[in-house]
Structures are given as C-alpha cells and as structure tokens.
Image 1: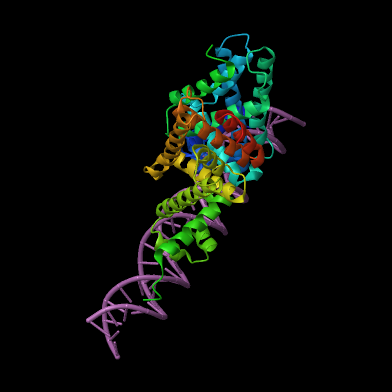
Image 2: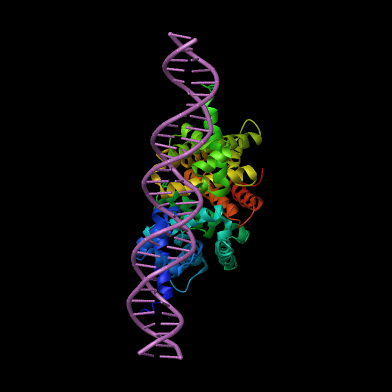
Length: 202
Length: 202
DNA sequence: CGTTTGATGATACGGTCGTATCACAAAAAT
DNA sequence: ATTTTTGTGATACGACCGTATCATCAAACG
C-alpha cells in the first residue's frame, strides 16, 4: 500500500475544508467536489475518507463542536486563573458572540448547520440538541454558585436566568451576522445585562 | 386569451406554496418543480408568474413578511383595545415566539430565509435587514412611553432593553425550533423577563 | 369573423449533484 | 518474490436542477 497516511488527520483536513465553505458560501454550496477542491484533494479522496455525504456533514459538525469548545475554554482562561463563577459566565457568553473573524466564522457555520438540522432532523441523532443544553446547564450551575457566594441576587431562578442569558446571546449573535449591528454593539448589550445580573461592572 | 386570471392571486398561491415547503423541508428543497407540484400547477406556470427563481424567492419572502406582520397585529389586538405600551410589547414579542403551529411555521420559514441570506447577501437588497430593525425601534419607542407613564424603571436605557428583549425572544425561538424546550417553557421565560421589566405580572 | 394576445402545456438543454466503478501504484505481509 | 492490501486517479451514471423553446387554445378586439 502507499505511504500509509494518517486517516484522522486527513479526515480533519477535509472536514475543515467543508466548514470553511459552509462559513462563507453556506452549506448548500458545500458539494463533494467543492469540498475536494477547497481541501486540495481529489473527489475520490473525499469519498474515500467519508463514504457518504451525510458522513462528511456529521464528521465536520464534530470538528465544529471541538473548535467551539476550544474557543470557550480559551476565552474563560483569558479572564484569569483560577476562574470565578463570574468569569465562567462572562467568558462562555462572550466566546460565542461573533465579535471577531474567528467567532463570526464559527457562529455562521453553526447557523448553517442549525438550519440544515431544522429541515433534516435525522441528521442530529442526538449530538445537535444536547450541546446547547449542556451549555445552559453549565451556566445555570455557575449562576447558582455565584448566588451562594453572594455575587448574584439569591431570589433569582438560576435555570431561567441561564436560559435567558444564552438565548439573549444567541439572538444578539444572529443580529450581528444579519448585519443589524456590529459585534461591539452586541457585546455592549450583553455586558449591560450581565453587569445588571452581577451587580455592576467588575 | 383564456379566462384572464388574477395574477396577484396566482402569484400568492405559488409563493405560499414555496413558504409551505420551506417551513417543512427547508428552502433547499424548494425547487421550481417542487413548488409547482405543491401549488398544484405546472412548472411552466411557476416560470410564467416568476420569471426566475430569485424572483420567486423574493416574492415569497414578501408574503412571509405580510403574514408575520398580520400575526403581530392580531396578537396585539387580542390583548385588548386600545393597546397599552405594555400590551404592545407583550403582544409583539409573544407573536414571534413559536408557541403554536402557525408561529412555528412562520419562524421556521424565517430561519430558513435568514440562513439563505447569510450565504447570499445579494438576496436581501434592503428588505431583509430592515425588518428586525423596525421591530426593535417599535419596541424601544413603546418602552420609552412606558417609562414616561411610570410603568418601567426610568433609569433603563430603552434602546438597549428593546434590543435585549428582541434578541432574547429570537434566541428562545431558536431553542424551541431546535427542540431544546417547548413553546410554553420559552413563553414562561419570556414572561419572567417581561414581568421583571414591567414590575410584576399584569 | 378573423386576428391578435394572454395563459398554459409539453418537452428539451446544458450543468451539477451524489454515488459507483474500474484501473493502478506502492507498501506491507507471506 | 509474490501476493495482499491500502490509497489514489479517472471517469461514468442516473437524477434533478434552473431555464428556454415551441406549440396551442381560448378569450378579447378590430
């Protein structure tokens, strides 16, 4: 056999080529041939590493999830170690707001997948629906911790507040991608609500 | 010539057939042939009333906007006449939350168009970006009125609060469509935030 | 009454899609 | 050294896409 190549690496290269196309021209433009060209390989290779298109879409979605998680972690760390309940909430939400080129790419790609899954629910066996849910529980947990530490009004319902914050952030992200306002304006609105929750700026 | 048919009516029939497809199978499934079948006409007729596919997409988008506006108006009226600042804000936001079959259809279709416009900005010459903006200004105006009437904390920044409420509602809608929670749960979260803003339930 | 014109059907064209097939080279296994 | 096995290229197939063309039929108009 020829040079025994690293399959995982190749799959990642091809999958990320799809993500790049999805973020700029949309998922409907991500044909197998287009992905092959973007990845710099032949159509046959795309078929070889992903037997079918659905496999490719699901594989790339997994890579997108990894990239998203990595960004959230990095954003939390950037707010200082060890993380406080406040920095965990701030870091998580500001990470998924499209304020720079990378986060715009991630959120645009995520939006493309979201719409695809809406039309084809079979695609998201379970992975699609659970990720936002995990995020929400993550936020709710740290909000509760913040309440116990006296940093947040204890009369607040933590799960409801967490759901509201995440929905607010997603909605703001949509408005940024739609060109209604820029990332800084959205960040300011998010900060306004967060500071109100945590009782004033840090 | 044959029976001299009503063009506007036919266009609406065909356009709404596309919206129906978009809401169930997504816009990528809305081919000219599929739309023709759904509308019960021949492919040629779709071409006759909409010379090109882009014309069809834009025409149907206009119908979607009409349906959305009509629903918002109806929801506001359902809260009693004459409308108060509070009922205007409540009615607007609850109208665009996917809580029943019709609103689910509308928001799903809107989401499909949103993603399409993200990938093909040329489609939304101006109509796409201005509609949420109008909604936001509408909300901000009535929030300010409510402040002057003493129903809302005057220290609040009305435009920021309006943007937050609309983003929250959109984000909640996304989570409902994504199957993360049902419409009633989303409505409860929205009501919680609205009541908090307006100082307790009505 | 004939002719023009608005509305509709049937069908075709070139392109792209996802997928499949066949061939073949090169490293590994025997 | 020969026989597997793994990776890769070239190409083909049937389906569907948006769009265009040609023919036709019936109402309106002179």
